[in-house]
Amino acid sequence: MDKFRNKFIAFMDGRNGPDRLYKAFVAVFTVLAVINLFAHSLILGVLSWALFIWTMFRCFSKNVYKRGLENRAYLQLEEKAVKKFGMTKTMLTDKEHCYKKCSRCKAYLRLPKRSGTHTAVCPKCGEKITVKIR
Image 1 (cartoon, rainbow, N blue to C red):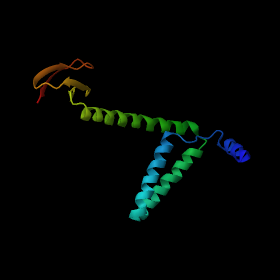
Image 2: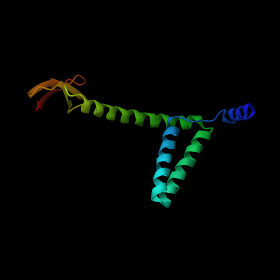
Image 3: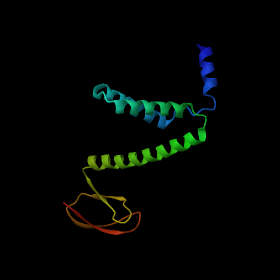
């Protein structure tokens, strides 16, 4: 078993290997394959296998620089999505505060939930915002 392991390690030397984008592609492939079990769609099957082949190509590619750029671009998109949905979760679970978006810089302002019309100052851009809270 050690002989096979050493040969595999030597084979993977200088190759990209699995990264976060690889893991995301494998997850998407798995979901598409499970959906295709029930849908029996030729297009979906071809699409899922094409994704799998591309994923394996990325994993075994020796062009580490280009695969790294792809992974960094994916990580930036993932970070934006996590920020967006993380804020949405916070806004839904926080019952003591009201969240409003600044009209100039689009930053979220966290305001106490007190009925009436209030004036708030955006900490990011300094814009004065009039907010109605019900």
